[in-house]
Length: 598
Image (tube, rainbow, N blue to C red):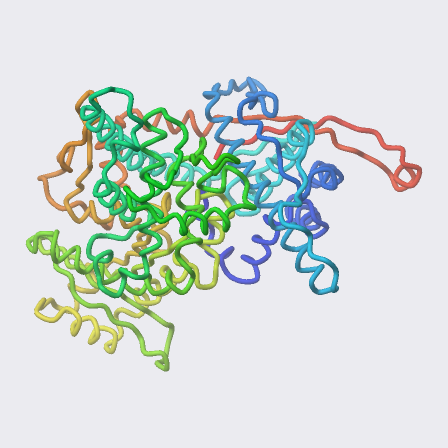
């Protein structure tokens, strides 16, 4: 959602202040910030701050199966009728808000541990976070929905208006732009995961053909070589480790545990998709499929104190294994830290630009793109720091793309805190990449910089004027959902999409009834069947929406519907004078809140 956040908010201390507001809901500092910046919300916000002691630091009981018990779909704002959205949208909102509450509980716990250590007190026992009842969970979710809306208003994406006892949040122009990008890029990520699911279902159907009795569990039909193949697929899809990177001698030992974990995930997902729910990992199965049981024990221990939905793999008291109802991508992402250390992740990040370079040389026709080395300002050089990891040259259109390559281990669901972190962190992959390339763009006309560019281009002989008029700047990264847009003149593409762009927009599609995948095909054909214009992310989005089956002509109406959609909730807000507070006599008013979906 925050992919178009105001650059002024990414500069310290503004970014620190915004981050602290989001991570400390209803604190004294947060209340003061609302008083100052959003006075129309002050009374409601402070009223909900009075409830914080009821729910802060505790884990909610999931309300996803009873979304209408927490939020409602308002019918109108004045004379304006509001569209009624599918119940699934409310459930999605609840899922995201419950994740915020879980994160909040974790932060409260960490702060408590830090205080206890500093004061020499006993550290709270692991797993000691309390759990809320249903009513308190609903109160907490409404409070967080208000806090999140206030945060988005502070970020310039929502506008807040108070009329009597009603508070309405609406999207600003920046918010509408963000929402459009979000609505378009989310289906692209879902399409990737859907294609993998169809491949696995086709594999299950194929394995069943070899079950002569029709009674064997799917695990009994799996061969170790199949798990090896699927581990490669998972490493590519969920870790952004392409074939060249996976096979590099210096990388193989770094990703050994990640590969072995992917073999477990591949088996468990096959079991789940086959409708068998659980796996009994006896010694014969582990030996036959060459599974790493010690690694599994390590991962389960590392994730033992997480919520079930964040554990990745769940083991019952009887020793059976399952993925539960957790999505495959989320389950894998939750476990990455247990198999890849920060040091290993840094080493892999250093290899990522080689992966892109090798991919272009081996898989992209030289009549489409040529790849050349990067360059950067020396550490003790003058002026702002710029850095280009590699240069791409569009041969036919004679355009240059200066690329920053950013590989990251962590890639959770892109919630607001994840996005704020990835954009605002001092050395975050997106912020740092954008800053380095923005500096290059600003300094490109300097003679010393142009000398570096021409040296990197080598045998590509182009005039200085042509370089200056046809240069673009791209951050290629591995964070899902941050895709196909532009900020501060720098293009942002996720690697899985970007490499398809280099192949003239290849899209893996499945047409057969049983879901068996066909070869990657560039469908539909774009203008003259040439390379896609990397410098135009809107064209890229339009193309891919059409390619995965979204009718572009219906997008304007769908976006209008999405922009108008709201969900509502009522808050009981206490109002009290100093005398009423002293005598503990307060009166309560009901405030109705309506806000957009994100």
